[in-house]
Amino acid sequence: MRVCVVYDCLYPYTVGGAERWYRSLAERLAEQGHTVTYLTLRQWPRGEQPSMPGVEVRAVGPRMRLYANGRRRILPPLLFGLGVFVHLLRRGRRYDVVHTCSFPYFSLLAAAAVRRLGGFRLFVDWFEVWTLGYWGEYLGRAGRLGWLVQRRCIRVRQRAFCFSELHERRLGEEGFRGEITRLHGLYAGGAEAGRTERDEVVVFAGRHIPEKRVPAIPRAVARAREAVPSLRAELYGDGPDRERVLREIEELGLDGAVDAPGFVEPERVQDAFARALCLVLPSRREGYGLVVVEAAARGTPSVVVAGDDNAAAELVLDGENGFVAASAEPGELAAAILRVHAAGPSLRETTERWFAGNSARLSLEGSLERVLEAYRS
Image (cartoon, rainbow, N blue to C red; front, side, top):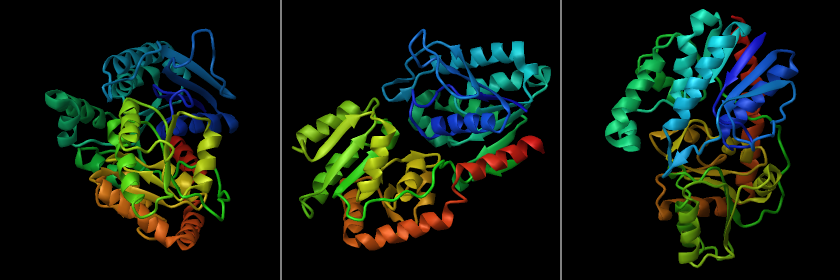
């Protein structure tokens, strides 16, 4: 089968759950003997070529800054959509399948525009479906235009994949009438041994963007340290909110207690999961929440925050593999962290059992098999 994977970012040049999904998807398809092309924006220095075994990586747009003031810029998606359109117009007949992320939407609209000419089938991942209200928060008056573009994409003839109950339901509520396949897993590893004795450290790993609410963590740690003075935090990742995070650490006098080293090697993050008291993910908006599964694979519970747009809360059973805080207010987050601390080894044991009981459902292999079944059907 000839498959074209379309996403404007490429792991590890950009780090996130979707980036890892598309890289893993492309590599696993290639391992199984399929011919795979990965279309993306160039995110590597000029003259370099990314190494992805068995996969042809094609940049259809220039290297560009994706974010401004914590929000996605409009120019990169437009140029990426144009690049996808030109590529598929010229080479679309080479593919049996085009598999794209719904967002940024212009690449989906480009693929839809040339689908009949190219003769390929279109498969679309809907990690998130935003409400009109959230579009307004994100873009202000232009939010309605974003919502209308999303609605147009929902009405494109496609086979849809969703990764959460929340966004599968929303896709239907927003008018999708085609077939939806629910994918439960994005985790590519197995159970990994965590340390029996844990450091009194909470860990965050991800982009420092407004939706992740990383600046809330230092203040929550400061509050929790009133009860557990030895508590520390390690905040991995980078993004537009990083300077604010560093200011919070300095203003609260947490130098030495809260470390924010930026992007680091994946092995260092995994080691942090293995020795952490818990993962803290205060996001208000998540399409899935892969880091919750990665932490649980090491017996490490998670603290997440309840919210209408947070699908990561679906992955946490309160008191079994972590706790769901009512809000990202410092007091609420601190209380959830202290509940993890008080539960001690028993919570790690139930987290290990939770992962063991759900590992097959949450695996990348399970999702890949369902994707291939959809391709063949």
